[in-house]
Length: 201
Image (cartoon, rainbow, N blue to C red; front, side, top):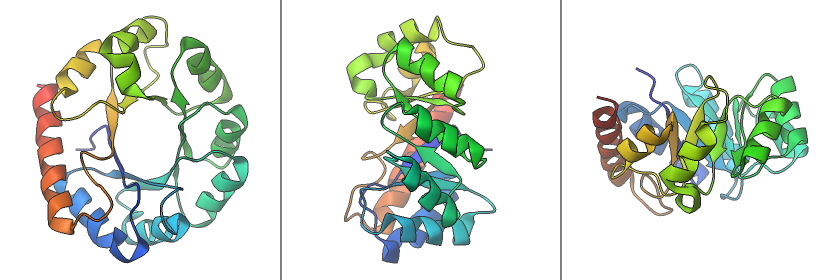
């Protein structure tokens, strides 16, 4: 099954990214983003796309401009995640037939992102809004628009967020921090997937 979880590998390096990606996929997470403020991010994205492009949605996080969207597309990335709502970035992403997940924090930003063609929305920073903030926004947003919580959402509170209307999650430091070895990431990913599956039931 494809889970509504995006693995955020901030700080990952090209020489370790394939092994880490393999561990994440094996645990049951099939969406992976490499933030563009990581070391050689485009190389890591290219390696992930080559290794897992047929079975995983691979792309970039912290995408702030149209030039970066093009660069990610050129190395095989299919997922564009941003911390902000930039209509030009969203429009370019959609024009290239990639998935667009902009960061929003207010209803105004959320509706601007939807108007620009976003695939889904990322509530960021989630820990500032909390589940109640999400619940309030959910009340006015289209029911069919996926809304992921990022920041402050993890295995310990998936259920609270889902009850407030979260469709999924972006998981960063609870899954991977720079310097972690593959076995640590594998263990974290397994725990996150188990917690997510429990919260669904």
